[in-house]
Length: 274
Image 1: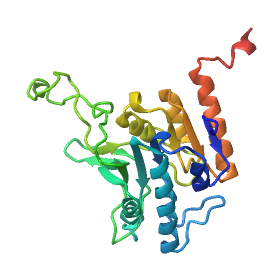
Image 2: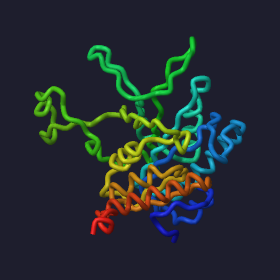
Image 3: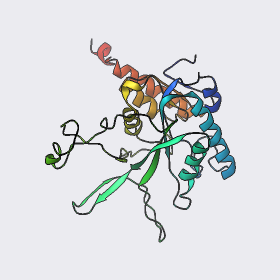
Image 4: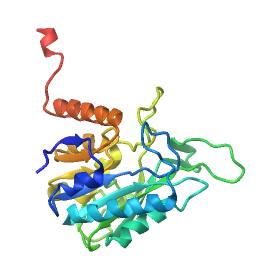
């Protein structure tokens, strides 16, 4: 059995081949979108047919290692010129036997004109044809489409408190967030170490959505700089990941180690103060 809480220098398909069938309860990942991102080593401009063939292989091996009651949260975006990319990728997972149980929309930026509020961040464009892209998909795949999730784990309070007692079930001031998740990027002034990574809050919400009590192991086949690992550590769930880029993998392992150190409650400055 591969050691847990590690990010391995292994192609994800080869890495998953070394895992027992049904051993992973939650997969959260964001593969390359094949839109020309400037990764350190990976070529993000391969032919579309080659790219989708690769995604089918990833999907097939992911289906094998996912438990029968497991969840796969696949974050995929496209480009303004090619918005079909996420749909095409999702179709490859459908072809391999996955069922699309929920289609979640990751909202990066939103404007509420009546309140005069604009929140979040997006990369501005100068175009007479397209709107700024403020959203990506999170496809929630399962094996049968019947996995019970923790709908209130990411719940929000009722705005109108009269609704607390209006509906059936528990009389609690919390409701399902729904399938639109506003998760803004943190503002970063310095250069990013990775050109396309999601915020730590995204995998945390996915893992919680599946249900912590039903999660023995989290996996990210495309670990990048380790945000899924950080999320799993913060939630107390073992993880495993794969990342072939040495630069990203080193950053991910360092971040995971630092997070585990912090979670243990150790104080790095104790020795220097005594």
